Amino acid sequence: MRYQRSSALFKAAQKVLPGGVNSPVRAFKSVGGTPIFIEKAKGAYIYDADGHDYVDYINSWGPMILGHAHDAVTDALLAQVKKGTSYGTPTELETQIAEFVVNAVPNIDMVRFVNSGTEACMSAVRLARGYTGREKIIKFAGCYHGHSDSFLIQAGSGAATFGEPNSPGVTQGTAKDTLMATYNDIESVKTLFENNPDEIATVILEPVAGNMGCIPPKGDFLQQLKTLCEENGALLIIDEVMTGFRLAMGGAQELLNVKADIVTFGKVIGGGLPVGAFAGRKEIMEYLAPNGPVYQAGTLSGNPLAMRAGITTLETLASLDNPFAQLEKTTKKLAEDIHSILNEKGITHTYNQIGSMYSVFFTDKEVVDFETAKTAHNETFNKFYHHLLDKGVYLPPSSFETWFISLAIGDSELDRTLSAVRSFEG
Ligand SMILES: *Cc1c(COP(=O)(O)O)cnc(C)c1O
Image (tube, rainbow, N blue to C red; front, side):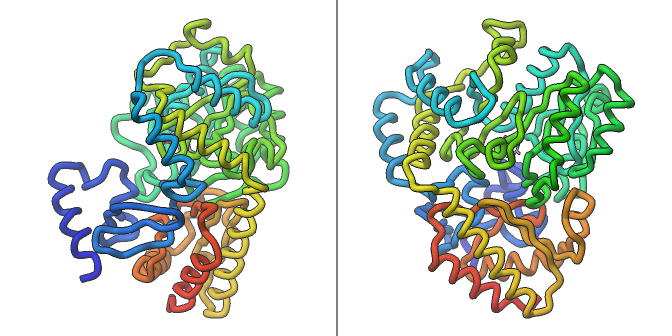
């Protein structure tokens, strides 16, 4: 049996970890079968407990944009470990990475580091509420901003995969302050503003959605959103946890020319260690404790090990000759070649791609929001998924996720992937 040891490890894990995992999508509930247990990773590849290797298209869900165990990052971490991993005091390193981020990202003067994207988005919303003195927020169906209560009203990926738009444990009181809009539908946002005058603290969104599959914004949707926020005295939070340092050094703000009031980060900014951050103009960020009244803190926030992985990843990216163009080129080729192979086979599908984000959807509809994403045929995706897995290609185990392409993926990895797609029977 191909996945014998993974199966045994999963069995043992399920006895002591709920569902055998520490984050739900990893359990393969959506695609079925046994999750693959990984033992090590290098470059474009992950290696499982049964001795197979896979071209990796999740890259830890985004952080490993340089590829796994990149030498510069590994060396920086090893050197830091010997000096201690956390002090709970200020360090010069935190200022260095903050300076880097402020210089690279438009419209921000100051950054606060946290330990996850969830924390970043949760804290950004608290800051927006404190700053505006308002309580309601607008989010979009299918956008994911971490698992904090305010966002689990109709979340993407994990929750959508299980057909559970709302999670028990989120109170009615919390739910009533989160208003749901439709992605790429500016009228749905206008209506919410009209019906809730002077009550909306913030609109939060993924500038390119990745948690209902990859869905780019259409036309000037983002710019119109910013205008609506300005007209109504609300702050625009652009959640760049996925897109930050992935679509461009300045993230979606730079690539798509939109201005955020608060930006959130995670994934790439931590280079594979647990890091999140939120950032904004000085007058907004100074509203945070200890200078301002909005409380936010963290024992391990800004710890030197995580900061070292982050700054080394960002500096390495910055030292490369146009890494984002290379990522775009690789991803575009991947997307177009898969498209033509599936077309030849007469398999109904569509795809979205922007920069190093890509999803194939087995539907005849154009996918522009959560409703259209949900028209994709799950059974076909699951067959596609397991076919590629058996051929040594690791995709995100749900059709409601974007693929993440890393700089380590080159011609031979594309060849393996495309030849696996060629033998897919639909
Ligand atoms: C992954 C993700 C989050 C949550 O980050 P965690 O580090 O998993 O808590 C928030 N927003 C977006 C857009 C994400 O992709």
